[in-house]
Length: 324
Image (cartoon, rainbow, N blue to C red; front, side, top):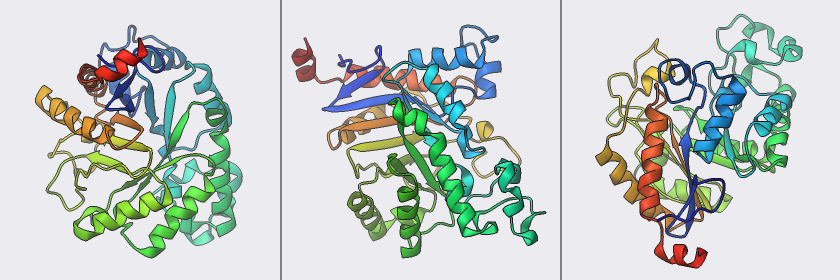
């Protein structure tokens, strides 16, 4: 069986690597309202996070993509979770070139938006003076200090959009982002398939390895123009794998929620196959974060529980003996 190396039975050791399995949300509306995973539907937000942390060793905070957090919010996450629990935080959309809610910009910076862009539906970094963009990076970084200082911050997920292709200017942008978030660890996820196709894949992995940056593998629907191949590789002592499901029908559909887009439950055969791939990955790195983003009702938490059991059953006998 697996060796427990941290909180509860949640952290596993497989093929010499520490593996944390969790989900990309603990507060999705369909999980809270339309499933019975939480003991009570009337639980307060603080109680839900505390319960989640009693079941899993890692969670990805997705809400920070839409609205930057405050230091007070980060501190509240620290207060609601036990030592050893890990939180990966998704970078605010403005910082990674995605369309951003204009009202998510801090109130005192609203007047900094260039006049010709103030009535636009979406806000982009190019709509702001460079100095204000720098200030946004610093405020986002500052907001995560409580997590970092209390040992909760696993890292910041930098998810780059589909237009962000493998160019030197974009590699420089990655370096700028990592520098702006120093000393926090950063994970790199690409949404443009050209980073991972043909010879470009080796170039991409070599670039990340040279920079000491974890590569984020994604499992998602294939066959679409936006599909990114599920390359599994470690480019640093930490690897990250995110599961988006295979809801082909909803993958490119407009006007639906993120939960509907990822509405897919992995079956036992799929999870078993992936557990074998994760074991192979574990042999090449020190730590892996396995995160289920199919956050519709209880799909993600159930799949994460099943994956934990599969990985636990393949834990190293040698490690088990040495831990006794």
